[in-house]
Image 1 (cartoon, rainbow, N blue to C red):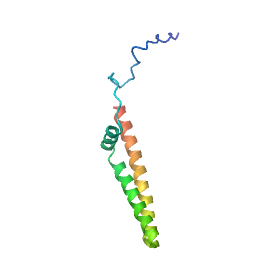
Image 2: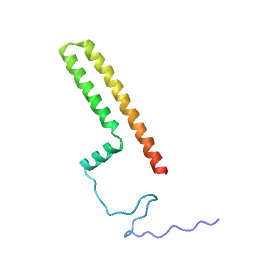
Image 3: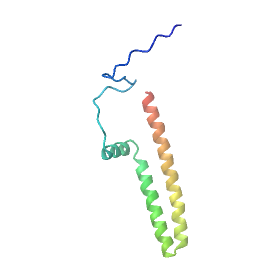
Image 4: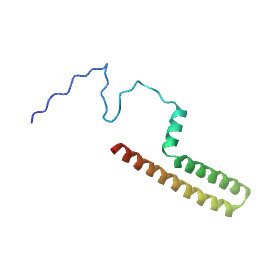
Length: 101
């Protein structure tokens, strides 16, 4: 089988990517992207907030000298971080499954 040469490059029409419809260029801002990503996988922001909350409260308890409560909050932070990582992985798998259909 002889391989044919690639088509000539035409800068006026960008190549089409399979699965994507040609649309006019649109720059998505931070707010639009954040809202879109939150709707796609709402558990990730929840996990991030839980992690930040446990860390903040744990540091406050540590500063006040309540070491037992501080230690519990650091453990809760690790659990919240684990939850966030699992939520990210589930989101990646679900997105990959959607693109295969």
